[in-house]
Amino acid sequence: MSAETERKTTERERPLIEAALRIIGRAGIDSVTHRAVAAEAEVSVGAVTHHFGTRDGLVDAALQFALAREVGRLRSFTLSLQSKAFDRDAWINALVNWYAKDLKVDAEAHVACYETFLAAARTTRHRAIVAEWFATWRASAELALTAAGSPTPRAHAELFVATLLGILLQQLATPRRNFAQETKDTLSELVGRLLCRN
Image 1 (cartoon, helix red, strand yellow):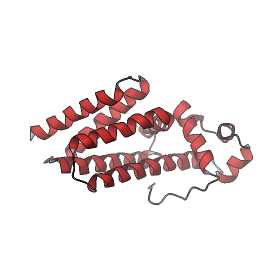
Image 2 (cartoon, helix red, strand yellow):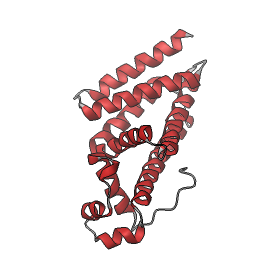
Image 3 (cartoon, rainbow, N blue to C red):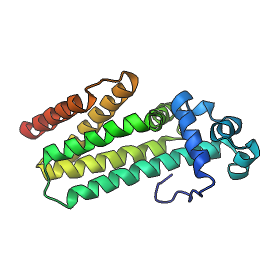
Image 4 (cartoon, rainbow, N blue to C red):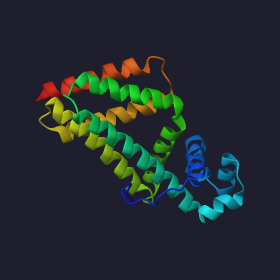
């Protein structure tokens, strides 16, 4: 299941998909039903079933939508790095500021991502989506670390992404007031050590 080949979301489907994502973020994938989405989106059950005949189709559409949005944002962010001389600290600052803001305004979407990771650990159904998410995060970090002078950007990107995702999960579970600065410091130290190691 690829963001490149996803079915086009219509304007009438978008609020239903966003409602499904909020439910996933609050209560997990198993909580998504036509009735729950209808209540969340304040529409009739018939309106939901008209667009999404099965629960699995609704869940898949919501996860695809979340993937496409995240992939699009990360690709846009990565392209912005290419348009100017690379600055490691500016990259980390921009990345962390972006996530710090997003976690405040759309935390449920990020929880939905982690719910999808857990679902993929239990069944193969969502593994393709999760694999594409990781590949996109990795590609973005790899580009930045290549520009920073890493001799092994792929391996360093793996470590960077694992660290970043762990930090984001920790912030969702136990929010810290100084999240942005602490995360910038942690990631800056990590990248500095990775670049000095080789």
